[in-house]
Length: 251
Image (cartoon, rainbow, N blue to C red; front, top):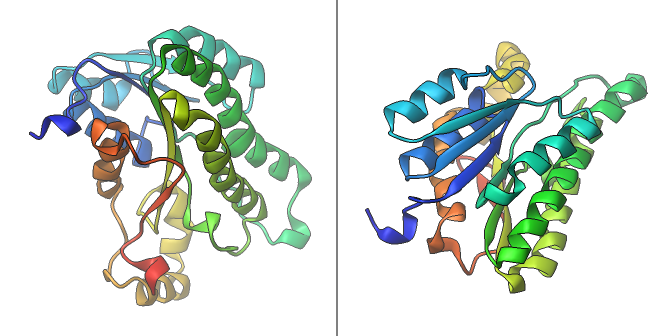
């Protein structure tokens, strides 16, 4: 393996790693040599599936159960891991679907807190230690809805659009001090979050017609992008949002 992509000796914190995109990113980072610290709202104490996969790869996996809608819990988690974090992948999130005119304000508040505010709170605490050491990698999971408006997901679109701006803002302040800040924008990936779309034949067909690759993405499609942005190969890459979308945005 090209040593520029070798993550041996580093520790990666991946939130929302219990399944889906977070699992795939954590697996890819472990495959590249990183030890893991994972956190999700329902994360098993032994790490569950990602813990077992890390062990198969010869990597350690420390697991935390964290409710990312609870600011105090997020900050406690940040304080527990900040000193050891070389790579921070902010992936935990949720989506609530309802037409904007009917969208409960409670849903708006919940989505903004989990998908945007908690991510800033965690990154601020962890980033402080990275800056003190003069090195670190921060990766956010953005979305196609960081660029587009979506349908029936106003809170999610607002949060993911906010992450695009946050990525740039933090990069402007931090990259000159050794900490790169980037984001990955998954396209339409076959996960729990997109199950409702995939089960709607008309929406699913319309989406597939627009994807030049001709298929829904798999969570594993995100792994290479995460390893790249976490590695020394991307030492001069910061402030970008990297789409992994089968060509959607280029259509």
